[in-house]
Length: 191
Image 1 (cartoon, rainbow, N blue to C red):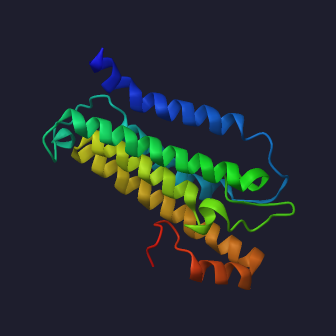
Image 2 (spheres, one colour; image 1 turned 90 degrees about the horizontal axis):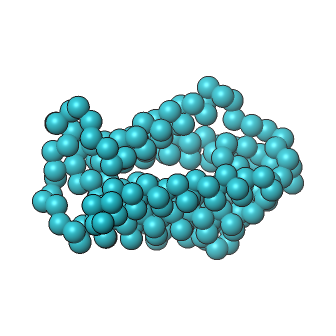
Image 3 (cartoon, helix red, strand yellow; image 1 turned 135 degrees about the horizontal axis):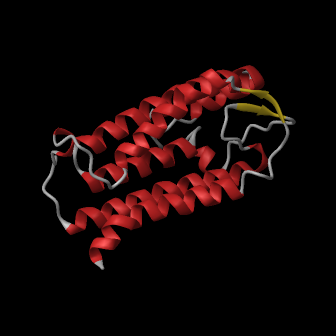
């Protein structure tokens, strides 16, 4: 039974998160400006590769499976708590963003600058939560493959974040510049 838990708990959390994300994507404002497909692929493809690296399935490369720390049950449970906390933080941000949300970098009709709730801690709390969840999954693996997955996810999210920041600065001008000076991009309380 415990082996099944180790194998399916983390993927089950991600599946529940994805189902929520999909179900909540219908009630959003009309899009007036959308990120071009080529740009979107520059972060979607690396994020997909990162997610695949973190899946609990073996690969032919023994090099990538070299453990960085010895395995212990507490490590798995701590990794599950980290992953759950990251996913829940991203859900809180998604709920707080309301109808302004989009999976793409977009500008919505009557787009609002949200600066309360999780957006008072970081400018991109969905990305913060996802990165923390990726780190949790990598900690469960504790191998080079997990480390590579987090590095790729971070690079993809950072690229998307920078693209989104440009659009927010264009849309909200000095209000966004002031917000960016007060609130860190990804890590709470880190300036």
